[in-house]
Length: 118
Length: 111
Image 1: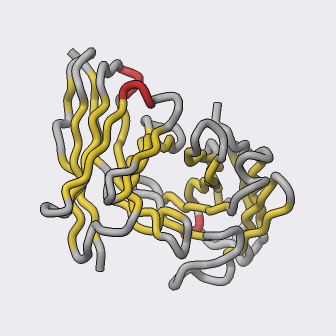
Image 2: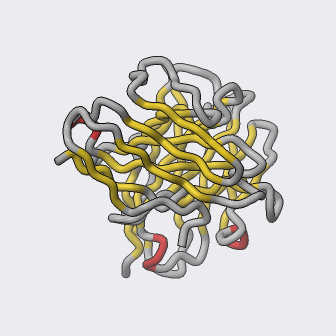
């Protein structure tokens, strides 16, 4: 079965760029939308954006100026870059698959905690 | 401030039926289907209801969803202690080039 695994630094300094990757195992990355979703401690879920394997992207309007996503089909991975981070970007970051039939996020990674601090 | 509005908390006793509401607008719930996610403490969210009222394989039929206009609701019947979790609604929003929006989440307590 398809599984997702986030990876990346757990600590990022303010004003720097947060970079995470999500590795897809048990299935192909092709022909799906892949999202990043985050959750600050004790708070709700916030969609960051998604990428289709063709390279097409949509980003949350509130984060659009700082977000870049990419996908590498040869590695079955997709990535998130969030620039100019502040303490407000401290959160658990999840990667998730949007399945066309469900039109919903049907598979999620376990999440990775990222803290922004000097 | 979340785009979709949910009550912050809900509660019920074992065996009871509880409902959680989710209110949106014409650009999200009014135009698109609603999904519901269950998040148990310390875990990633899990898809509970998709396309307003459909259950993925493995989700008990105690969980049901509905949508009317710009609002949706999740109902849980035969409440169990294992249902104690946070519940989130979500929908695609057609504004600003399109993006997913979530409700703020409802913490369900089984008394």
